[in-house]
Amino acid sequence: MNELDTLVDHARTAFAQAATPADLENAKALFLGKSGRVTELMKGMAQLPVDEKKARGAAINVAKQAIEAALNARRQALADAELEAQLRAEALDVSLPGRRRVGGGLHPVSRTLERIESIFASMGFDVADGPEVESDWHSFTSLNNPPNHPARSMQDTFYVDLNGEDGTPYNLRPHTSPMQVRYAHQQVKKHAALFEAAAKDPGVSAPEIRVIAPGRTYRVDSDATHSPMFHQCEGLWLGQNVSFKDLKVVFTDFCRTFFESDDLVLRFRPSFFPFTEPSAEIDIQFQSGPLAGRWLEVAGSGQVHPNVVRNMGLDPERYIGFAFGMGPDRLTMLRYGVNDLRLFFDGDLRFLSQFQ
Image (spheres, rainbow, N blue to C red):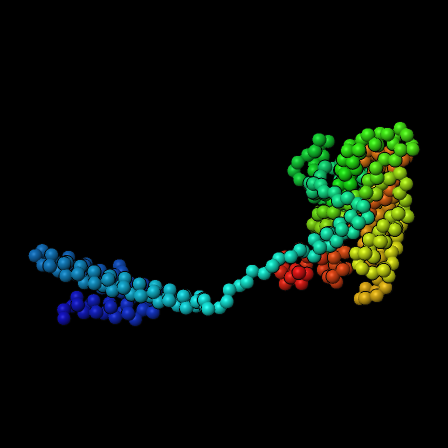
């Protein structure tokens, strides 16, 4: 065995002993690097006579090709071994049963909204719908809440880069009250002849406006009992002889039906809202269960302010009534015993599946 055959054998042995690609590259440098054995042999040809260079060069090239072939073979073997290890680590047991497609269901807040709509529908209330991006006039000014009014500070928080006809930017509605105003305008327009006849003749009764407005609303607020996006349901009943007593009867009947409890007690606390006068917060108290004895705020309410009635296109001297606003999210928390509002919006199936 000559010198070049021995060199090829040494290279094959070194490559075979390389356990990782990095080790293989280090072994390669010993034979094919700038200072490797093959490179040194090529440099040594400079001292050979001309007639020996051709034969020597050809022999060295044959040895170099054999070393490169051994190197590539070992590279492929290491790559195959790495792939095999990866496949073993990521192996799938195809004998396991597949995942079943489980049936979906309504979100707990959606269940509450459907329940609210059903109860008020039984009392003769319509359900209104409207845009979530609203004009300043519908969101505030029409509700007796003009620009720079201090009552706006907690509500006018989300705006979009688009101005309305009055030059003010549109906002993400902070409550569903704008839907009441829109609905009232629609009814006045739809039954214009009846409203005009009632305006001319006190003996003619115009149609009543009886509606609830459920939907998403937005305010900068986030904690265990508040969310930047939340749901609200507002109600409106306007007529020629609708009183605060009607509000108490309607809302008491709603709460007792919603919670399926006849021993539920309601309390109306004096408060202030720019769109009602007089105004009241509505609290409820359970007589039994884990919340027994505690007063819990569930809604705001009051007689509709004359300015708001006027902005709805009606005469406040002839049309009176009440409005209320409640949070379906909070009602859902009370109904199902949930203590953190954020759970409704996290999308955790472990939580949501409990309501299916």
